Image 1 (tube, rainbow, N blue to C red):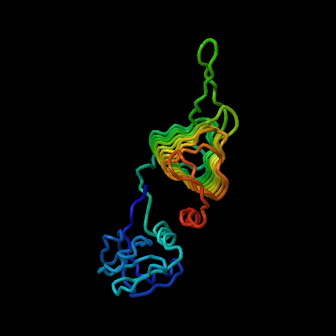
Image 2 (cartoon, rainbow, N blue to C red):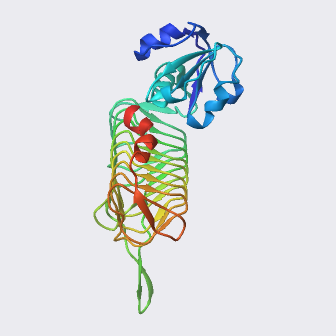
Image 3 (tube, rainbow, N blue to C red):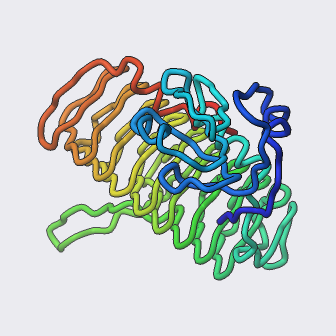
Length: 318
């Protein structure tokens, strides 16, 4: 979706743009590297686990890190912050990357002959092989990538990104047994997706029989995720790949749902500010500000500062 622009900034220019100070020489920066692959004139990000590597760097480079892991190294120019990840990625987003153009089959504002009776906002980018049902509403600056299908009774907010091969509005799995066999239950409900939502490649969001499947603002969903019928996902929540849950599950705001999490029972409610560890099978509701981990076990502990660290990017970067 993105590629790095050719760029050249002095450290003083960078600091002026993000309103911070620096320690060291005012070097020229024209590339980005991983910490273990540091090159001259590169910009790097360092976290606590990489502290020892800072002492070994021999290249003239710029490092974003926190004050607690600062070490003296004459080769390095430092930008120190309590939120170095946010500063690093904010600068990257604002000045160093650009969208690739492979998805832009069409850019639509307000209406399209190709998609009649669809209510578009402004600057909606449409990829190749897209299907959009009549009556759909799609907000301004939203991107629908290649091979996406948007079915009926769907509303998508502004500045959303729906990646390749997604289906928004697929039928929930609804059947009942009768004396004559299995009867299909038509899914005629609605889907509401807020603003700034990302839905990863090959994911589905299911329409319910009645009522709404709801994804609130700023939710980020990984590839290969199924959001089932009548589920509700709270604002700022992150859901990693492989998530599965029964119909009716509600997840609060500012949660992190790890890879391969399974929620059994549609009556379950995950509270706000919760972390669910990878591979966990959830069998009962979880109160606010809790962490649950270990497959098939319900080990619960207070989240404390862990959730704040997880959400540095999602709460600060827009």
